[in-house]
Amino acid sequence: MTQLDVRPQVADTVIGAAEGDVRGKGLGKGSVGLVGSAVIGISTVAPVYCLTSTLGSTAGEVGLQMPAVFLAGFLPMLLVAFAYRELNKAVPDCGTSFTWTVKAFGPRVGWMCGWGLVIATIIVLSNLAGVATSYFWLLAGEVTNNPSISALDDNKLVHIATCLTLIAAATAISYRGMTATKGVQYALVGLQLAVLGLFVAMAFQKASAGSFGTGLDFSWQWMNPFAVESMAAFTAGLSLSIFMYWGWDACLATNEETTGSAKTPGRASLIAMVVLVGSYLATGVAAQMAVGSGADGLGLGNPETSDNVFAALAGPVMGPLLGILLFVAVLASATASLQTTFIPVARTVLAMSTYEALPSSYAKVHPRFKTPGRATVMAGVATGVFYTVMTLVSENVLTDTIFALGLMICFYYSLTAFACAWYFRGELRRSARDLFFKGVFPVLGGLLLATVFLKTLIDMWNPSYGSGSTVLGVGSVFVIGVGLLALGLVIMFVTERRSPAFFRGQVLTKSTPALVVED
Image (cartoon, rainbow, N blue to C red; front, side):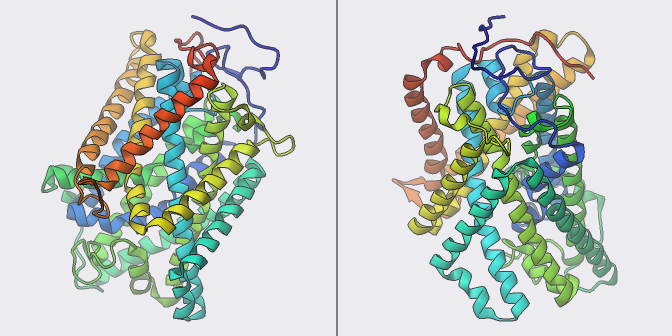
């Protein structure tokens, strides 16, 4: 194994890391435990926000098989989660996907994987901020019973100003460290899961009473993914489902700040995944039994309400007073996720800077809060600028950018999964456990996500995908998705000229594990 001599300015090597060239970053160690790490993973995904924005769209694509598609989307994420767990045990580095793909495939592939994570997170942050802003004014209008207050969200300047304020607040909380982040998240995640549980219980009650004419009796056939009418519908539903699980890997981005950094983040990610799939299945089944999945009335597939299901169901299912709690839960979900989503992007930028793949200024850690302060502020500024520009240019451009998000997610998740199998290739014949958890499961997860990536890429070419906008006859979603990846290549080549040592493999080396931490 090739390995550099440790330089005088390099921080201590991460304990338990497989490679001597993996550097410590100066983050606050022991700030997060198992529960706190799992809460961060759940919060980043934002289950209540995901459900209100995709429950109806998924039902519109696959009908009664919505619960089956939720399970189908969970499968590749679970398989990839095993890859993350094994890589984290060997190399617990806050750079996660970036660091691991460099170790497996070299600096250029690793840099692009890091870029995919960063740009996907910036897109999500801007979207979360926009949703939180809309629900803030919607909730204000409901509480005051004043439609004119809700209508303030339609004022572009008011909307942007509110959005930038929320981004600034989330940046400030993340800047102050994991302790502040953890305290806020316990409250926000607890609130949204409690309200979601109340909604599920009341939806089951309405279903048993037959309160709505479109309600249905439960059927195990809903769990059969092969009953979806077409492959195109299944792929569309699967893309939405995969988006609903995105963000669980935030647990791993805090690995250098977690108690038991080699094992705790991986366990936390699996706990988060189980909580998410349980929440999605319970909510999907309860809502489908209560109002059905059709396009009539309160049916989940009604195009007039499918983009914001809970806004339509809150009153009818929970009543006017308790229904307001559901608005609060969506706002809490988006706000909580807005704050925790800064964690992976800031720490990925910190790691890339520490290993000289980005300018060294982003490698600075705040001496008091022990956080990547400059990287966190950079992420906040980039999110604010991105959202403001996209909103002022065109709502269609902003919508299409969000549609292109799935491409980025599948890109860096699948690369990380393949990196696991390649990195541990010398250990796959050592035991059945190593074969499956380090090889078979990650490869299967990577292949599933790569297939979705390619299918989405093909579908994006069609101008009807997304908002329907075109650029020279090509769908604008395709142009944006491929354009963002191409932009990453350009930035990578510019960075290579300024920081050749990283790209020559002289800072973070491509290698195989020298030491593997076992259970």
